[in-house]
Each structure stands twice: as C-alpha cells, then as structure tokens.
Image 1 (spheres, rainbow, N blue to C red):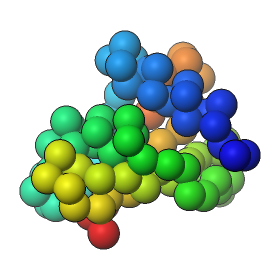
Image 2: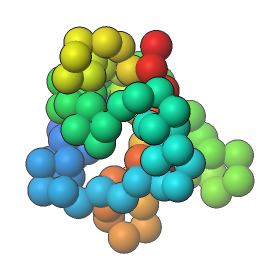
Image 3: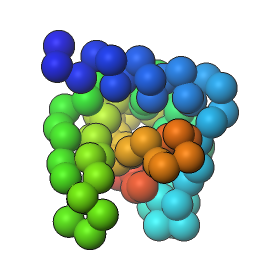
Length: 94
C-alpha cells in the first residue's frame, strides 16, 4: 500500500505517546462524544484513506479512517509536525 510506512510511523508515535492534540481536535472529540483513547484506537487499527496538502503550510496531512473503542467509525486528520510528533488536527465520527 502507498501509505504503509507513514501509517507505521503514526502508530509508533501513538504507542510512544509522542503526539499532540490541537484545540480544534479536542473540541471535536468532545462534540462527538469521543475520547483520546478512541482516537488512538482509530489510528492503531485504521488505514490512511487520503493524503491532502495543507493550503496554509504546504505540509501533507493524512486522513486515517478506523474504529473507536465502541466500534463506531471515525476519521482522524493528522500530520507529522516539525518536532517529529504526530499532530492530531481534527477528529470526526462517521
């Protein structure tokens, strides 16, 4: 698959707790009744379905579609930040 290496890197960062959640992401988690554990589970068990170029920064961001702990579908939008940490930009339930 095209994004296997990136997904492995994201999963390694999640397992090491080397990620940050944006304020927007935290707001969306709360609005959808999710938890950070749901976000972690989504990344650890999901797949990258799309890559997008950020209009402002020019950086690549990835849409990871997976399942929450309850088994519902969700998408996490994330990127690798300049410090090497995984940045969780936003999350939404499907």
